[in-house]
Amino acid sequence: MLPPSRTPPSTPALAPTPDPLTPDRDITHEHFQAGDQVVVIKGVAGKELWGDAVRVVAPSWHTPTDEDGWRLRDPDGGAQTFITAHPRYLVHLSRHCPDCLIYLRAMADHLLPRFAGHDDAVIDCGWYTITTLGQLVHVADARGGR
Ligand SMILES: [Zn+2]
Image (tube, protein in one colour):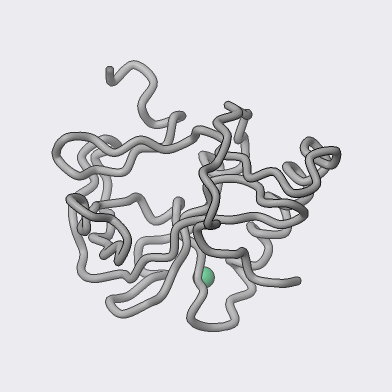
């Protein structure tokens, strides 16, 4: 399976879509380490997944979940170059990783058929927001918190 493409050049269309997989993902904090290249899956571009490619910088407390997270550097992040994410939001790009591939494949199986008719469309599934304190929050983790 191909790795997901990075942020596509065209502006994604927002299409809020259920994501039952990410919240249930069983991945430890130690699965990642500083320096890892990872991607946060955001949606579908044509016939593949796409996301924001970021680099893992350092351990950081993820306040929305009250769990250990990772501080990330987003080279395209502008004012929010550094954000903090929960490990389950992250997928390895930097090395072949069976655990992350299983998740990617499950996400592709879940999402791609939903947008099968939108050949070249870029879809943002609307899962993530960033708080004013630079915390990346999945919609499932934001429930009740806002
Ligand atoms: Zn991995």
